[in-house]
Length: 257
Image (cartoon, rainbow, N blue to C red; front, side, top):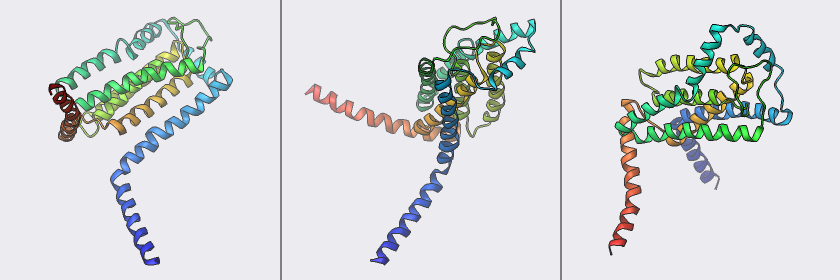
């Protein structure tokens, strides 16, 4: 009996080792890209829910940024902030989606649409649930009327850039997207603070939940864009299309009968 138990345990440990070896990347992504950001976001959200007020570091940071205000920066921030959603992210995402559609990258296209639309749903739901009012430390030149937590512009820009990083992973474009995208995300976040329409914790929360959402969705949808992975995506797409077409064919044949 003991020999059988030892044999079973030995085989299980071997299987467990192979499983971890095969999926270690996904497990690290799940831990660092989903669990950790969600844990910090949850801590921020619970505090906002209970207190309905700012964090001790929110107002000092806003005041420090506001101390740099000048007319030229006012115009720059008011213009740049519009790129965070309708003037920048939306048209750029539309162009990329059309490109993915023409390349027949169904999985990558589905991933991009899913994360961007899901980001909007998450943002609106969180705002309606938490009801955090916007800062009122000074009269903003670009006032907003809805709730503050989390920042929609921060979520939109971070979701878009994080999705592009997933789609370009392993390609020569990855580092370009990382550098340019990081600058874009930080710049949009800065405009929200400079304009006085968000607390720093609103922007931070938007970044965190967007990272968790895009990474989590990538582990489920497994998008592929780079040439090295194009064959994998094509194979998966063909097999999935066949599996979807099979019951449809059965239904059609029954209808013909």
